Amino acid sequence: MSRIHRTIFNRLLAAWVVVSLLTGAAVSLLGFSRIDNQLVELATGELRKVSAASLPLLNREESQRRDLNRLAADFVRQHAIAVEFRDRNRATVAAAVNPLHVALEQELRRQTSAFPADDENHVGKLSADGQAVLRVLVPLRETTGGIAGYVEGAFLIDRETLGRLRHEMIVTLLVVLVAVTLTTVCLYPVILSLNRDVMRYSNDLLKGNVELMEVLGSAIAKRDAATNIHNYRVVSYAVRLAETVGLRHGEIRDLIAGAFLHDVGKIGISDNILLKPAALDEREFEIMRTHVTMGVEILRKSDWLQRARDVVEYHHEKFDGSGYLKGLGGEAIPVTARIFAIVDVFDALTSKRAYKEAFPFAEAMTILQQGSGSHFDPRLTTAFAGIAEALYREVSNTPEGVVESRLQVLIAKYFFPSR
Ligand SMILES: [Fe+2]
Ligand SMILES: [Fe+2]
Image 1 (cartoon, rainbow, N blue to C red):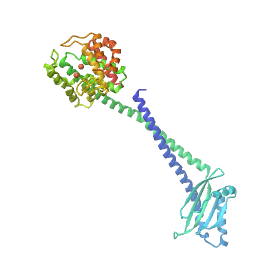
Image 2 (cartoon, protein in one colour):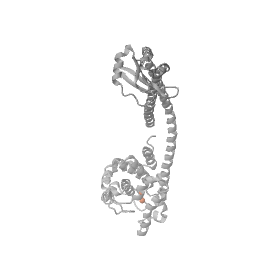
Image 3 (tube, rainbow, N blue to C red):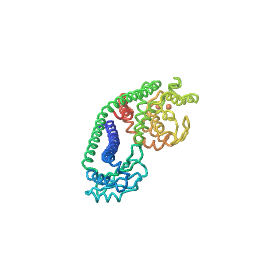
Image 4 (cartoon, rainbow, N blue to C red):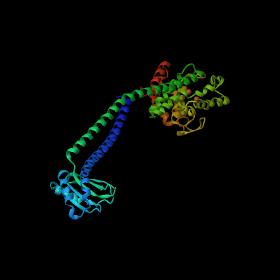
């Protein structure tokens, strides 16, 4: 499974789990509340059946309550565990207990709390002797709206009804979960295809930027040489040294861009100084130094090319602080610029120029070692000394086309790792 497939799969899976849990919880809550409402409706409906008959009997003399007691006894026989009628003063005027549920009623009596002070419907779910019981209190009103009394009933929750309601809820829950799963499954190819488009656009953009980097590097290389080989070699040396000392992926990317563009500011140096086949005098050298500020200025035009800035701005700094442009020293010089300074000088020493022949490898290394600690970071110089000979053999006398094609592999590795 590719990285992008894995990422989309993991995120959709996480979304599926979260949405399933949330909708599952919501459906369950709604389902339980629906079950409660239906049970209360059933119980309240039962109580209402006796309301009309009990209303005229509630507030009579004690001697005339026989009818009410009979009504209560009939009611519990058919529908409930117990029933209790109270008059408008909340005094019990009649009560009956289903003979089949005497023990249950006694257990319920122990759990009874104070009679509510308001005149609202009250519902409570209790558990007695391992059975679920619903207790419902309904105020009975006269036609004028005043309170005539109260009827309270305790009902055994019928297992069959409860089972049916629970079954309905589970079916609803399963339907919702299947819908969530199907939606997630359908989203997968859609997201994958959208992501492919985005990746293609972003890759095209990145490709354009990398080409810009190479073109710009090549443009300045053409000013003072017939080929791009110096750029290709310093990029190759720099990456190998960076990998040897364990630079992070992002830093190596910046280093590659910096190595390509290190002398981009030389585009603004006049030919008589840039191409002078002899050492520069003090005034000419002063002008030559301005290629650093001009390079920084050129990069400022592009956010993407800013990644090359550390190398462009600090590649002539020296470890002892005697370099230019800022005179930074030690680790205040960015590590990419410290690495680049070594490989740039190494390639300059081992290459033929208009004003000098190429130094043999051993002599170039001696010069580098002499600069360790003054010009170059000693730790990096030592690391380079460990890989230089093999690297030199691999790169120095290799045709430009071969170095370039190896470089393209490095560029792909650091700029297009997902290809
Ligand atoms: Fe330079
Ligand atoms: Fe250079």
